[in-house]
Image (cartoon, rainbow, N blue to C red; front, side, top):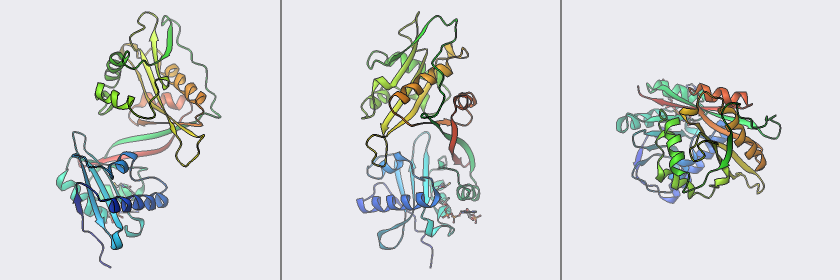
Length: 307
Ligand SMILES: CC(C)(COP(=O)(O)OP(=O)(O)OC[C@H]1O[C@@H](n2cnc3c(N)ncnc32)[C@H](O)[C@@H]1OP(=O)(O)O)[C@@H](O)C(=O)NCCC(=O)NCCS
């Protein structure tokens, strides 16, 4: 059989093709034990966005043999998946060539960083440029110490975020804490408003640490995200350490552990069984803090690029 290498570039997918891509993603996940396409990429199958291009390798009977999605922009990224039945036929090679031709600065995600992805990236002349850990902690069994702030900081308290009142102070602390981070450090009021509009947003899950002397400034924060668990368990909830930050003026004074603990206790009270978070592997201070609290790396995703 001649391998299907016909790479079709599309700006939108019809409903049948989008379904075929979802089936392809499920087959690959069953086979690999890790999802190749992220939640955002799957959502993009059903929408038309200027920055999104779909690369489809059709198979017989309306099925899809392989699929890639490129999200263009300043930090262009892509995900790519080949059906388990059509692997080792050069299809990923054809897709990476197509991506390199039109989007040479794109980074390609390899969720789980499986050996096949490493080999494919190496064969395409790409190098690993970023690694993201998924870390988890079982809150049912974790021995979480109580929240205690270091003596000498003059009275720190934890309180919920007040939408509309704390926005500016939080944006300032977030931008300063994540000045070197490609995505998080650039969040502005519009991004904050978009999150406030999400079903999952609840200001009670968004904790601020403030000092007695400057109660309107944000010394540190722990934004947790609680969502219904997938898989139909109505009582189940997923809990994520969505983002934790300490203002540089307050860094190095022992706030990281108590601010993280405040959110973990909160997630436990919300009924979350396993807390999870994503962290860049080169953020050694954050990874060390999470490890100290009992988190372990569950899976590591890697981004590859032509460098
Ligand atoms: C990674 C993946 C896309 C490879 O698809 P594929 O169509 O089988 O890859 P190709 O046939 O084009 O092979 C590309 C290169 O990787 C090598 N390769 C692919 N799978 C391999 C494996 N399991 N073990 C060793 N080498 C492998 C091939 O030999 C080839 O190298 P060569 O050109 O030097 O011979 C596929 O396994 C997949 O969909 N995985 C899950 C999603 C994923 O990890 N995506 C990220 C890709 S960076």
